[in-house]
Image (tube, rainbow, N blue to C red; front, top):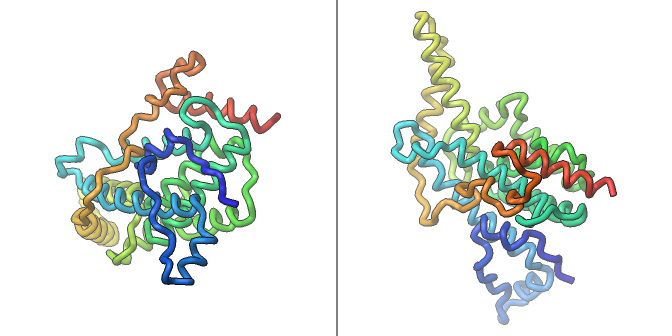
Amino acid sequence: MPRKRTLSDKGLQLFNLLDDIPPKRFSSSCLRQTFLNLITTDFDIKIEQNTQHMKESTKKLYQFLFNNNTKKQIKLSSLCNNAIDNIIIYILTDGFNVLNKIQIRNNLNYYISLARNAQSHGDHHTSLLIISAIYSNPISRIKIKYTKQQTVFLNKSKDLYGSFLTCHTKHLKSILKGYRKDFYPSLMILDMHYNKTKEHAKAFKCIGKCPKNLINVQDQLKSIINIYSKLSSDTNILPLYYTDPNSHDIFGQSMYISNNIRQKLYILSNSALKKFKK
């Protein structure tokens, strides 16, 4: 029995999935493909399509890394924050109303599956983006019980990347190994550490003392960013990144009177929390 689709039409629009035509899943001349067709669901196809869309967007976003890039007028941090907030919103809602706890769990399963698949395809930016949304306060305060498989993946990811408390230094160490084919590092981590090392180096130079290791890391990151910023992609950046989280229909309700997205997400989280207490 095929798994029921989880994301709403509004959620699918953010990933450019609404109008995608599912690929043919078998060839009549191939028994192996026929078998794969029998065990493949629409859920699996959407995950594969979304993984590809997200990876192409990741490649496109690398051009925003350098401060002297003309496209920097749109801040990379703002695009990533938009994406995280939009994921939070479409875990908890269909764009119009807060979902019930079964639907929220289904959405979480979808996003964790997407993060796992992105990670296996080397797209660590997408994986960390989704994990950041899952560990955000509006989601974590609901205290959702994850399946064993989901918990294993989230723990594995923490071992792989580190955490916000450690500034994801484990992922930074992996990035510093240099450019590798099919390795797409987190733009958030690249941008954060490059800007930090640049500011620290500037401060140390002002007092006449600049640690050699700091300069080396800054130079390494600059070289790595330069390579990734030249990656090409024929696709446009997904609406997930440039859609203003404040623009969703659910925030037209009178209870969301604040103009601050953090406060809106807190109110949204409260509504979802009530669903889990029923």
